[in-house]
Every structure is written in structure tokens, then in C-alpha cells.
Image 1 (cartoon, protein in one colour):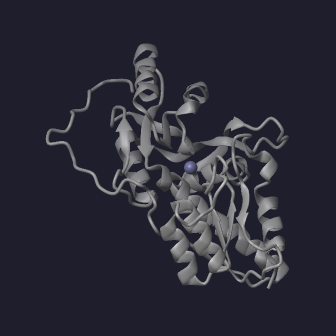
Image 2 (cartoon, rainbow, N blue to C red):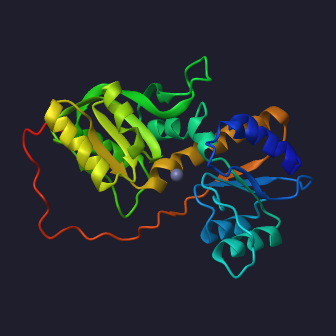
Length: 291
Ligand SMILES: [Zn+2]
């Protein structure tokens, strides 16, 4: 069995920590570098339910996309919910490692996995990383559909391709408009509207779209006669496909080294929204609106 330090070196080769945003907190949260690793669980969120799952599974390492402590802390006492997670993991000899914005920018990264879940062909990053001469790393991905679809059909595709959540998929746009090119960004993507417009994508699928940026994108489209339809999925759902991709990447490394690692993907839905009531009178679509 490899030591934790060897497995982490492999993870850091897949998602180099130097490529993380400056504000981010990626890397190993807890774990003994010399401890042997046989079983690894991948998940989006390092929450209590996922930590408990790692313990039940007998995992030696939990790899999550989201950091446990983004802003640092002066205490890991078990009186706090995060301290409780740290205690559970250490007591159960489970290491925790985080690959966040470094996994977003990687090749393949979080948005490649999202595109794959939707059956889209990736043509390149939405915001290329200037330090990558191959032009494959960066934020978001631009994609093409093999055959054009209506927005209504593409919405069905997204709903079928992503794991189910209470939110489902929210859409802004004429359901009959044609979708050929799609921009996707796993996680919160409303800072990338300008890049999506510049790329001329027919639709933009991301998460956490807020009222004002979404409203302005829609007004901009109505004003200019061009602009993407918007699809807003649950944040967790847009990033979950990465856990499968990441597990497959580590499997490949394990095979190459003869490590015999057992990798698992958590199917626990950690989207914080747990229920939804449909409005009693759904808003009607605006026929003929360009967005
Ligand atoms: Zn995220």
C-alpha cells in the first residue's frame, strides 16, 4: 500500500496546488504522511455526513472539492461542526485532502467533467490560462453539441445528465431557440458572463446565478438581440461529476504504480437545499424573446 504522502504527490500532479486561486485553501487538511492508504473516497463537500460515510467505508483518505476551512481557524475543538469533522476523521485515521480551484483550472478539470456528464464535446476553456501553451487549462469550458437542439431539449439533457437535486434546473430563455454551442462552468459562474458573451455561446450552464447578474445578462441579450440562454443548476450537481472523473484519474495512477487502491465516489447529496414547492401559477414564457 502506498503512503499518504505518495498518494498526495499523485493528486498534486493531477491538480497542482500552485494553480489554485490566491484566496483558496487547497491541500491536505489532516493526515499522517506515513500512514498507508488502501481506500479513497471522493466527494464535493467535507461535511459531517460525508465524513461519516468515509468512516463507514473504512477509507484512509477523503478527497473533497470544497475546502473545510477556507478562511483559516484558531481552533479545531469538537464543539464546532467543522472541529467535529476533524475529530471524526483523525479518530478514524482518515486523511482529508482538498482540490478546489486547482481542480477547476486543471486539464481535465471540473468543467470537463460537467461537459462530459451532459454529453458535450469540449472545444476549449472559456477563460484560458495564459500560462498553458497547449490552451487546455483555464476556467469553464466551451462546448458543442453534435446536433443542434432547442433550449427545451437541451434543458432536458441537462436535467437527465446531472444528479437530481431539489432545485432541478432553472432556465432563462425562449424554449424554442436553437442551441449549438454551450459554455459550462462548474460551481458559481456568474462572474463569467462577459466571457460567455464574447465567446458567442448559445447557452450558459452554471450554478448560483443571482438575480442581478442574470437579469442584466438577459436585458443585455434583449437589447443587443444576441446573448446566451441561461441554465442554473445546483452548485453541488455541477461539481459532482468531477468526483467520478477524479476517482478514475487516481485509479489510473494506482494501476500504473501497482498500488491496488480502492476508490469510491460519494453519492450523498450535499446540496444544502432539500425541498422545493412549485409556484401555484408558474410564470409564462415570453414568446419570441431572444433570450
Ligand atoms: Zn464549488
